[in-house]
Length: 367
Image (cartoon, rainbow, N blue to C red; front, side, top):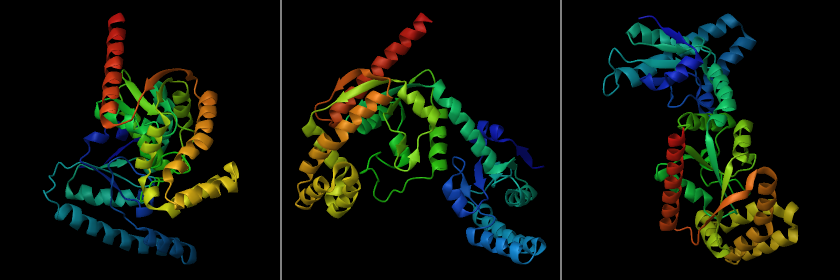
């Protein structure tokens, strides 16, 4: 059966129909970003690519191709033995993989040729990951405009992220930007043991999430700034969020402090790490104030530090940012939460889902 070469748009449209998506690039290329659900069968790993590049520059292109052919053949044989010959359950003759590399050239071509010779129904992504990436960027420009966003606003610690999670559990459509970015969006935002993805991987995750949403239903998101940690929110999405209607969560200060101490428990356990993060605020809040917060933290009074951080740093910044950037903030519908506990959040999520279902039903009836 002949190898079928397909465009990025066709591959995206048919992505769920392939039995496997195989990335023939090196492990570092794969780690930076990849097609959703892809598995890595490197035709050349990072060290081998570097070796071939050296031979190409210092000897000749011909010698580099010879050495590359040996390495590629050896790697493909290993992949076949591990993933095909010893596959459990055995792969049927009808197995249909999509194979790609950076540009859809030699690395994916060599692997596809062998798989095709076995008799599998092989597809190769024309233009490789590069064309997939271009397609993702094009869609990120238009996808947000098709969706009806509703933005959860609220001062730091008011349970926005928790409510998003409960809404998702209740069946609502949720775009959790901070979860996709592996960052809570502030100077204290880095998550222990969870490095942020690359910008490309973040954008692919956003694209993957948004293309699955039903445009006829509300999509809930949290108010965010232009950046989340070191990652940038795509401009078309940011503009759409900032123009969306807002729901303003209001919660008493003691409850907010309690939630933050729970959500940032790793800082309570690792006071020196907390103090290191506080040091980043010296320019904004002054060395004396930050030094006082660090002393309180080292004395075990984390609650006092959190309360002062909220009142002196986060709340004023939040108010200015929301008033300046979110058009629906001034007319935001209030949602009062007293504690942010599971029962209260679940009740709020059920009420919001029911309200939007009723509105959608009314809109359909009117249409």
